[in-house]
Length: 103
Image (tube, rainbow, N blue to C red; front, side, top):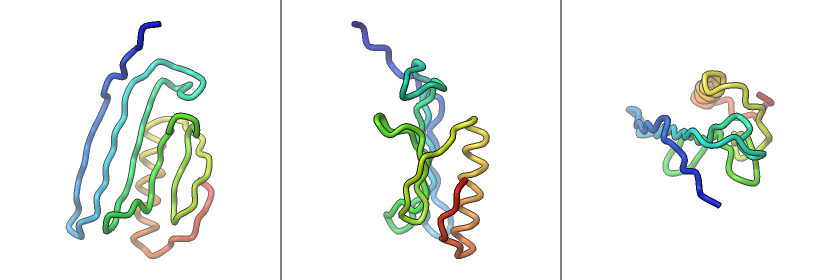
């Protein structure tokens, strides 16, 4: 069976003035049970080398969210919605609100 390769959609890595890292990776992939939306993605916010916020769809886990050390399933709607929620999580984190909430 031939392997269908993923096609890179976006890759962006930034470091803010405090040294915190934001990284986005997204690929277009064939729609499967694990990637029904045809996207493979990973979005992370890293502070002092530790992921404090992340959204991804690792194979076998499906869409999920990491916040304040808690991992929960995530309902993927669109990359735009995911980035809106990710940025809201960063704002909450920077305001000192690290209580886990459902997104």
